[in-house]
Image 1 (tube, rainbow, N blue to C red):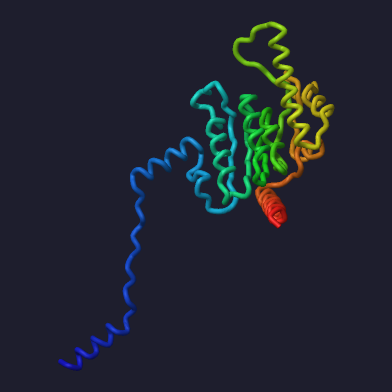
Image 2 (image 1 turned 90 degrees about the horizontal axis):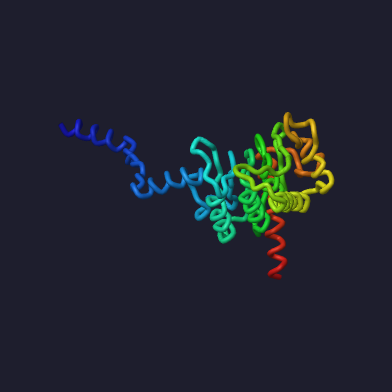
Length: 257
């Protein structure tokens, strides 16, 4: 009886201890609702308030929605969602760089220019990457960053401004349209290497677009025209963003010395 007890006791001592099973952490219903709300409104789960690293990614897809609400079936990027994110990014000291990914058909001119002007005025390092397409008012957004990339098969459409809805046929309407168009042209030529004459020539070119005027630039064509800096993908964009962040960090250090 004593021998059996000794053997059983030794077996228990040699056995590996049973590790407790880690129970999954359950989120509160309120936190789950906030996550779903961010996903629905902003197209992402995490907001810029608590980034996991020093780079924040901003995605602009579909049609840029401005003052007029588009049909529910349209894939849209609402500028009233983008602007607060950019303000939060600027105020967040832990964010050092912003990667803007574009795949847009264009949209509201004033909303697109507002986004472009906000991106241009950020103190953070910024890099844009055109995937699929960066058409129409997506062009100023693409060139508003410190450095721009375009995928080899991505396209960019340059065309004159168009008005939709009821138009009052008076000279003032056309003058306003010309001024709005000049704003776009001057912004693009100021923030890229393309000349104003070349950009206007591409904008009003005949024959490239069926039943319309304008030009479609594909990958290398956008780079050779001076509109985009380089052909590349996500790897090249992130590498360049890291370089720009390092440059800004060094300049800040020299400023404190």
